[in-house]
Image (cartoon, rainbow, N blue to C red; front, side):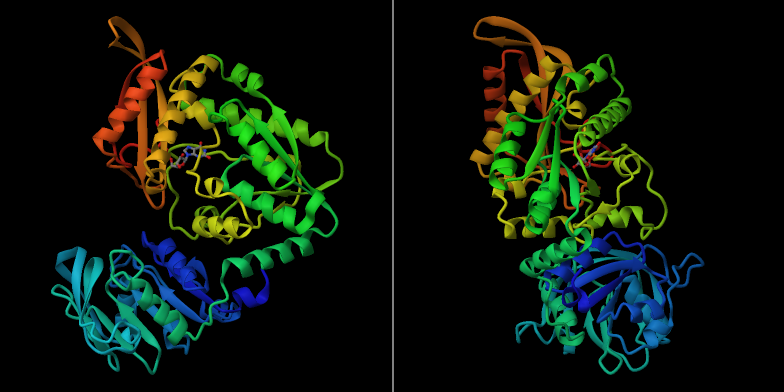
Length: 519
Ligand code: XMP
């Protein structure tokens, strides 16, 4: 990435907080590049990266515990401005000979922070005496380290914020990155801009220009292959590559027959005509449905779809000449998940596949222009590149498509019913301006039959479940509280307009223990 853009950067050291990615995103929203590194990253490395400042995240351990996550203590003695949040603050307190004690009461949720004068709070409106903040901790700082000044307290945490302006070290027991903390973003901005001295080059227009320059440099006059799905990430990669290398971009779009109503046509219209991409379409519905025939197991269905996709993609690739690179829509959270920044390995609940396995089959060097961006940044640069709003704001759609929303065996007939029901649900969500208020919504085909009466006739037909989730990270989610009048309306339309459906249910389960998709 172009130097100026990342010449100022904030490093976030991850001590295992559930909010680490959120901190990184919030810093970027202040207009400054941020990068997440493991907690034990050395001062030497941080200096090599020319960090403008460091944030030490929260974490689940106690600083005195044997399991306490280590860090390079020389960092705290360096001149680099550092903000410690929660566990990060406690590490700072211990290092500078303050004291941390376990609370007999956990403090979790909203709290009132009483503010004393502190340089980091200087940007708040002048009369601010108290702030509503978000707390999530067991331990707390019980003795101020030498040379530090207390700048905030709450009922449960008498030392909830401290600073040493000479050393440029700051600590908060509360979480400024969480939206429940009032003025949290302002406080983070004060750290990044006023204390670390960053100017704020990280803006969509600069990011686009920089990525385009990088692609031009990497690719030269060679050809790049990209698999597009109609989703946000691959569309933004397509738009970027098209801007950088024009006709040297070859796209493959595999219609697996598992897409939503009208989706394939819409992709053609927007990407082929709108962006003037070279798109090689493969209509492979029959092959996918043939391979899925008789399969009921969700994981086996995913594997079949993954393998069929690779087969089709490779067959299509063979028709193209002189391809030198394969582009992918990998985004920063994917890199974080797979790079070992995170501690421990997550249990595989579902084997997610996008274009899994492709690089090793094709043996082509990869181009991943979005691999340092969060999803909201991908959307912002998509807008900057002129992609239509509906495409940018689209809910995520799983690689195996409607196959994991058609429970059990997948057939063309069931897919058709599901497509109609899903399209009615989407239409109504949009009409009632609810689509953008939920993170992901869709219909699910349940292969059970239920009795209903339509007019005077008895019907014994299928069931459709509606799912609408609210989430920020898709790791946990709550069912959206859609109002009953709205749900009634969607249900009536589905049952009246689709004769094969006699009942509609709304899924109210949270993740965990349920997942967002039904399979
Ligand atoms: P779950 O169902 O695991 O979904 O709670 C979390 C998010 O991941 C999406 N998802 C998938 N995406 N391939 C994908 O590309 C898959 O196999 C897959 N399964 C789930 C899901 O739509 C949600 O956004």
